[in-house]
Length: 139
Length: 91
Image (cartoon, rainbow over all chains, first blue to last red):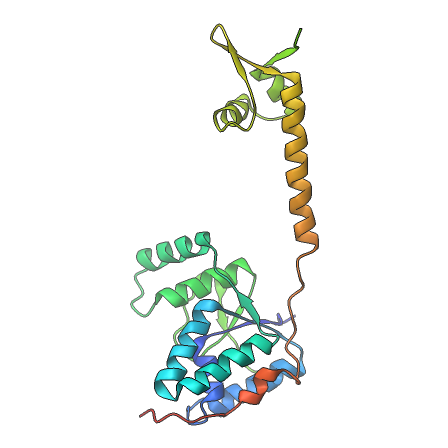
């Protein structure tokens, strides 16, 4: 059975809010699917910070504030990385030879592995650590 | 007179390796005295240590039991109101 736990990455949030984003319709359908099927959605404070910065820089700071307010009221579960997660992700980043891997992505992989979240809602490059997979809408 | 136990005896009682007992003593988790180069543990100190460990484990298991269940995303979630709220000028 497909797991109902999904981690929302930075581009997932941005594409949902930004209607000019090329994946906006795609992500909107995904969020509707999550809501209808009562999925458990997760994100971390690091991702939250990235989304806020992205929205504030590319759109406007007020949209960034709206996003923070919505997350505060939302049922999206916020994950707080611990010191051990930071250490593990830095080790992962340093030892990995993948150029596209960023600190946020390695931290995301570590957190997902710790909380048994198998799927990530993203359109960007996804590290293949711990059997992580991008979320696809079932047809 | 106090009843004193050796490291081996305490290890046998707690069902751990003697080196674990020595580590507990080094970390000052377990009180011990040195008598002529030999380490001895008072039976009362061992009891106190045992109670402390039991309390810690029960607290941890309580925390696990009371951990809040993860929320589910529903169609009335406030986040959904942000759908297509703005448009950027990305090229």
